[in-house]
Each structure stands twice: as structure tokens, then as C-alpha cells.
Amino acid sequence: MFDLTHKVALVTGSGRGLGFEIAKALAMAGATVLVNGRRSVQVTQAVEKIQAVGGTAESLVFNVADETAMDTALKRIKRVHGRLDILVNNVGMRDRRTIDEVEATDFEALLQVNLTAVYALSRSAAAFMRAQHAGRIINMSALASAVGLPHGPSYAASKGGLEALTRMLSVSLGQYGITVNAISPGYFATETNATMQADEALRHKLEGRTSLGRWGQPHEIAGAAVFLASDEASYITGQVLTVDGGCVSHF
Image (tube, rainbow, N blue to C red; front, side, top):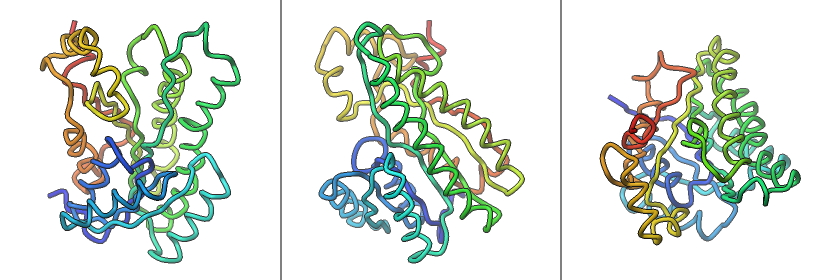
């Protein structure tokens, strides 16, 4: 079960954090994984780590918000691999400021990366997948789409929009054998959340918001992605799989 042999997967923002763990897990399940990011050194290091544990991975450095660079990257995938089976839209910006601090231009800039770029890349990837009459698109959402927070209005809006886009794409692409789902992570102990973890009071407060009483470890996101990318999830589409230790359901 969950065998991804002969599949080609692109995971955006996979140089570190949850994206890296997803890329590594897909590779260990048999896929050829294209590791993406804007920083060549970071991406190369991620590829080497995956190769060191027996996975097949390659670098694909480009900025998802740069449509020209995205088109060039997809042409390379077509030329080198001839197919794209799995797309994980993981890359995203985070802005934890309040509504008094976030200007409209800042709001739009974050939406460009977290939502518009996801649409553009999914649309292009779907062209590959239609020809194959099969494919998996997995979008990385967040708890901010499901609960109200006192900060990060643009981030919350982008993730709420992402989940709506997930449902819309699932309807549009289902006839081609393409499933589109989202994963909504809770609080994970990643580099991005290092400042939050360093604040002892905040760390304990957030631990208390979960049923399991702890933060998630980065590798704990991997199983959800491998499952949704596999044939075992072939009849699941338009869904949001929440991986949060019970945070959303915990009072």
C-alpha cells in the first residue's frame, strides 16, 4: 500500500520544515521528488539529505510567484520526465501582524504567493495530469482557515481562500481522474515557528489547546501527504485533512 514507484512529484517550498518532510516521505514511498525553493544552497542540501536515506530527489529552484520562472520549470519537467503525477503546494508566506499594521498592499502581496501562485501552478500542472488522466494535487492550508486569530488577517484570508479553491479545483478536475485535497497542519515544531516555541508561556498555552497536549513533530505531517498522493486515496477529493493533535476539536 501507498506505493509511489514511477511517480514524479513536485513539492514547493520543500527545502526545509514540513515541505522537506513531505518531499522525503514521498521519495521513500518510491516517487522521484523535485525539491523546490528559491535558495539553491538550501534546496541542494535537502536533495542530498533525501538521497542519503535512499530516496530519489532532484533540485528545481524557482520562485512560485514568478510566472515566467514557473513556466520554465514546468517545461523542464516535461522535457526531463515527461510527466507530473503529484503536486504539493506547500510554499507560503506568513505575516503575524494585526489589522492595524497590515496595509492593503501587504495583504495583496501575501495573497499573490499563498493563493494566486497556487492557482497558477495547479492550473499548469493539471495540463500534465489531464493527458495522463490521473493526478494528485495537495494544498497546504492552516488552522487560521478554521479558527479566528487576533493576528495575520492576510494569512487567514489566503488559507480560507485556498480551501475554497481546493474544493473548486476538485470539481473542475475530477472528470480527468485528478484529485485535489488539502492538509491543514496545527502547531508544528518547525524552524518557522521557532520564535513561538522560544516563548515558554505561549508554547505551553498552545500545547494546552491540543487534545494530545503537545506540538507536532515535523515528520508527523508526512503520512497524510503520502496517503493523499497514493492510489489508496483515489476516491477522496475536495477534502481538508486536519493534522493538528486535536486542536480544532479541543475546547
